[in-house]
Structure formats: C-alpha cells, structure tokens
Length: 550
Image (cartoon, helix red, strand yellow):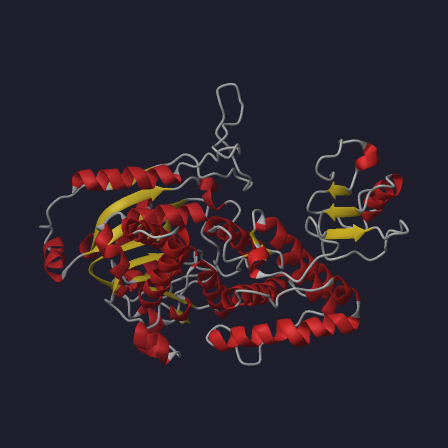
C-alpha cells in the first residue's frame, strides 16, 4: 500500500499486507509472520506490516527501522501516528464480520484452553459488552485497548478492571434473565486484549442485519451441534417457512400476531420473524417521512416493542435457551420471552412459573418449529404419552414409546388458537410412510393442510439433520370444523405442494452457484456468485398461489 499521490513503486511502499487462509497460524514456518517480516526487512521505506490469517497482527517499524517481536493492536488511521481511543463516530460497520468472529473464536479456543462451546459463550459475552457500549455511548467508548495495554500484564488488568468488567456488569444488570449474577468474563488478559482489539473498530449496531445473522449462524453451527437430535435450521429454510406463514395474513395484522417456537434452539425461526417484521415496519415508518436516521430509530423502537409483546420461544436445553436469547438481542429483542421448558409436558408442570404464566395452550396465532428427530431420544414416559391423542391413535392401547417429532406435531398444534397456523419441519416418512398413516389420519381430523414442501436431501447437509426433510404448514380447525372433519363433511380444498431441487448447498454442505450453459458462474449485483437456492422462490410462488386462491 502507498501514500496518496506517490508513484506505486517499490521504493514508495508504506504498508505491506500479507493475507493467508483462515487456518494458517502466525508461527507457520513458511507462511507465518516471519514471511511478512522478511518482506518488511527487504523494503526500507515500509512503515507498517499487517499479517492476516488465523489472527490479524500489525507490526510498526520504529524510527531506527526495528521491527518489534510483539505486534500492535492495529494500524493507525490515515493521518494518525498510532491507534487512538475510538469515538462512536469513528466506528464503521463490519463487512466481513464472519471472518472476524471466526478469528476471535479460534484465538480463544487455541489460547484459553476452553472447549469450543465454552469459547463461543465467552466471545458472545464480549459481543454483548460491545453492543452495550455502543448503545449507551455517544462519544468516547470504553470497549477498546491500547497498544501498551495489550503488551503488559498491568495494562491487561487495567483493561479488565476499569472498562470491560464494568461494561459486562452493566450487561448483567440489563439482561438478568440471560446472565446469572455470578457470571463473569473468564478470559485471561492476553486473550481478552486480543478480542477487544479485533472488535473495537466496528459498530455492531450499524452492521447489516444479514451480516450479523450470517456471522452468528456460522459460530453457532460450528460450536453447538447437539447430540440428542438437536440441529440448527438453515436460514433459507427459516425464511421460506416464515415467509409462507406470514403471507397468509394481511400486513395490518402482522404486528399483532403472537408467534411461538416450541423447540427454538438457537432462534433461527424467531430471528426470521423479526427480520420480516423489520422490513414491514421499516416501510411503514418510511411512509411517515423523516430522515433515514429518524426512520431507523422509530423502526427499531417499534420492532423491539412488538417483539417483546409477541415473540416467544421454548427449549429444553438451557445452553440453547441462552444462545437463542443472545441471538434475539442482536436482532431486535424478544429475548425475555424465551424459556427453558419441556414443550411436550403440560405448561402447569414446567419448573419456570413465569413461562407457564406467559405461554399456554390455544394462545398463539402462529407456531413455527423444527423439533428434534431420531430414534435415540424416543419419548417413553407414560405420563407424557398419555397426554397425547397420537399416542393412542390407531391403537387400542397407549403406545410405549414414540419418536419426539411425532408428538411435537400434536404439541405444537395444542399451542395454536383455533384457526392458527403451524409450520413444522418433519421427515418425509411422516407424510408418505404407510406405517405413519395414523399421524396423517389424526391431522386430517384436527387441521387443514395448507402446504407441503419436500426439501432437497442436501438442505441440512452441513447442519447434521435428517436426509429427507419436509416443511408442513397446517391450520388448526375450529370446533365446528373439527366436527365436520370427523364426520368427513369438511368442504374439499386445495393443497400447495412444491419440490425444490436446490437449497444452496451440495451434499458436503458446500455452496452451489447458478451457472451459464458454458459453466460460468452467474454474478449478482454485488459482482458475487449467485447461490443456486430455490427455496425463496417457493415462498414467492406460495404467496402468489394463496393470493389467487383467496
């Protein structure tokens, strides 16, 4: 890199940047920091060097031409001699937040001795502190570290005790339902200083929602894969299902819909709901007029209020509950309505009385969910089974065990108001296996089938899910309609069906792209390859079909 206005010649080089793959370590014998330093040594006019691989390391050259052993936090901004204490106005949106968070997580994992999931939660605590600092500060920020602080134990302790520790205490005060009173940032001083240095230049508040979502999604998928049938719904599946469900309602009703995910996991469906609502509210606020900043403030305030009133989640795994809460905070909130509870048990039997007071049967307009699959986690508790019609459907006696996804069909249905809509991810076998006919028979007596989408086998390739997934959308019948259905007198109706061929991934989980007949990748408006994903078109076709049918 060169200073402005000078010829781009070797004798005018000002900064040398050495970029490596994300898995290359600084101490790599051939491609590590030593390679950068050799280039700097060969270029006498070079003032700074920047090495980016598994970490990002900046090296200043002093007035005597010496290249230090220990790196700085970052390069100075143009016109400055050294990195300065950031003001809120200095922050910039993150463009490649995914790579930054990956570097941070890998650094914690490699240098702190934590398991991947523990490293993930330590990183998220610092993200919370960062967001809180941005929210509460209009001038000088507290989420920063100086070069000299990063290099000394005393400086690292000053960072922890005077800035980051108090910030996280304030976070705990605001989000008591996420972080217990004794929670703390347990990173050692060196690791803490590195993570702060990586994040301090960015504004996470101003970073685009899809950028934050993609970054958080990757962190979650890489670190929180479950072993009890838990897995994480790809974002395109969440967006397709939520888009289809919300298109069933007039826009004026969207902000009053009570929406629940009975197996919320990390919150993918709920975040998709928030993003759809943000788009609608943004259009509504734009129509009222005002500057872009005013519209953004009004949109965010309205979104937070609506999410707090109407968006709810349940999950039996406390680790995933906390992860979902964090995800919702990053995307607009509703986090106070996520509870640890067994959705298959009666609400009155939940340990959390607050959850039972706020979530009960027949109270929700919409349920969207992806229940755990598989035979390893079968439900065999007679007390649970006897609460479900499906446990006796087609049987003289109570079944002794059932896969959880079968019971969750009825459990989700129970939370719906009459006329409410359920979108649920299920294995194809429930929809076409002769041995599962009893489930379909029960469904036709209790619900109107609106849509069935057979997803490509590769949809969950990199998320650990079942190889033959479907999305089923049904509407709970009213009492009068149920009587008609049981008498086989319900008026006939059409069902939307789709079989998309691609979902953006191959069987190894790698992205696939649209190509021309000549095999060239088709570029989008950002000059990037266009992902070959038919799921968004399914939602569009469904909305058009329902609008025409209605």
